Length: 67
Image (tube, rainbow, N blue to C red):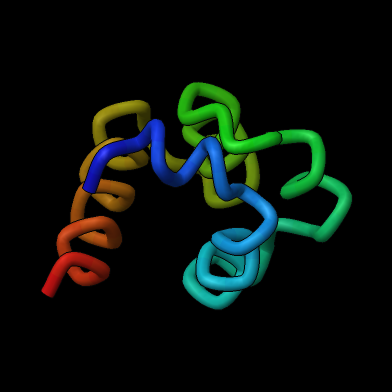
C-alpha cells in the first residue's frame, strides 16, 4: 500500500487505524494527519513498542489491507 494514498485520504483511513489500535484517541489520530512518522511515534508511545516493533506492526496491518 502506498503511504501517499493513505496520507492523502487520512479522514477515510482514520477509522481503520482506530480499529487496529484502539488506544489511539480521536484527537491523536487528528494530530497524526496521515504522517507515517507521527503514527509510528504514537504507536511507540501508547503501546510501549520499540521502533522496530512499531514498524513491523504497521507493515503487517498494511499487508492485511492489501489482501
